[in-house]
Length: 154
Image (cartoon, rainbow, N blue to C red; front, side, top):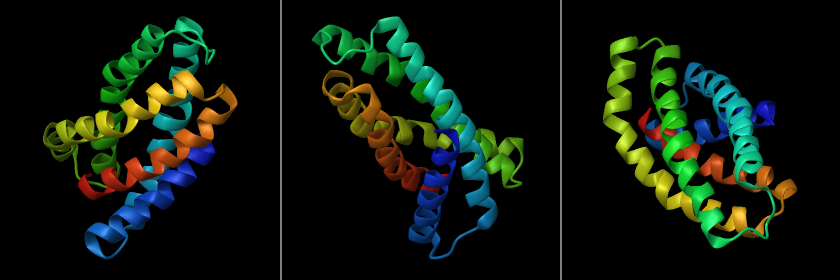
């Protein structure tokens, strides 16, 4: 899961850079792959396991439990993951700590709005209707779309 996350997000990063600049920076793409492997691949998988083990993993959950899982993901994991991307991408591409901090402050509100619009509905559907074995593939596709947005701001 971690390696595929890095590869998928690297490809989406290339697409986002080309949409933004008309060209691609290989250092940015490699940085995205590295950050994605750790943040989305390793940490994201652990987070989802934690949510499922703590709050339940069946698709026959109550509406309240589904909403609690989606809310927990949005309020706990999303700000940490988005901040990690916004901070680490500039830092790994040589921009320095001040620029990395500025990136988080400037772009986190936008990413959290996008997170709410994309991931909240997805999580409500996934946690209530998608079997566990289908969630990684479907979330990987949505992650690619989200990464294009990250690449345009970070």
